[in-house]
Image (cartoon, rainbow, N blue to C red; front, side, top):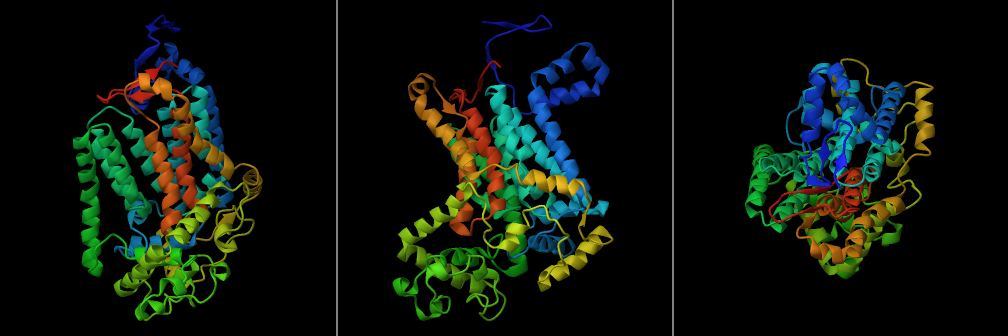
Length: 504
């Protein structure tokens, strides 16, 4: 039945969906006309009333981020932070991490304030929540609001935004690409490709996402769109690769893939089963797998076989040697590798939160009680000196009470437990199976597979290629929640690419 609105207009129960960004543009246009005009015709009041629960969640999320800014000034540091700062002042590709986050820091350098950096990262976190809610509004409003709750209110998400690391920027870029993928406009395809390229140059785990999105367009019989997306993504990546090659005479965008995969396989690699050639035997660890340290130690520990080789750890020769060892381990012990990947992946879904991979790294994800000490490793010490130039002053973290204490108390209670995340991931396929008969009557492709498959790839890739880390899980959460919300109702894209939306 048609529904009569407060202003007397009648809207049909089923209508064509707006592009994901149109509502935001309309609100900005209304704001530009003046708030009094919006109040006069009742539109602003109507918007607030319709979205009141989401606005409450957004307000609480904003307050929590303000507490982080007040309680931990100007930012929290992670070991990787110093490497990013070095790249700001020494513009060259890093062998371990792409320079996307360093470019982000470079853009904010004129402010000479890490507080400005964390403020922008908190705004990106809030914007991610808004995007999730906006796209999820094809579902009931309560589902759309719940989908945005983890990214807006999870204490560990807020702490991650306050760390000087690349994950918040990466998350925003990927969620933006997913949001654009829900629109009908052809011009957005190139923008999706550019966002995915930016995400890949921020964190290399973005590479398989380009294939996921291209596959989505092929599934919708838009092969041309898939080609446009691939071309748009490849242009900046090839340009960065050319810069990397000019610097190191190596092909790629980083030079540590082999080393990280080698470290990953050391959780199970048995040289007695592998029977490696003599040049690979130097990388063997005689200890049984159950007595070995976490995988990361095989890259950074001074007594690791890879680190003890001549030269720096990430030379082409060393990385190629590590890649050969890892490939042999996977080929000779495929079941052991699969079991190891499942073990690492399973850490994402635990109810408790054990200290892993070690207490030091785990501690970086907690709002601290005391200010962290100075960097210990030599490269970090160099980065700290550059950080002082960036800030044009001291860079130590000042902990201010009672704001910091309030956040610590909040963090002890407010997080998304692993089994809940697993349940959220299971909602879309279970809902699809439950609606299989109805789906046969509705021509088209459901809209949840894109965010769902992206979330799954973001969870599996680190477990398969590197190691589980708590901060690798958080960017997947808003996408998993978005997919769950979209799967609640039969929101389908028909074969011509148009969208249909049930009335709210």
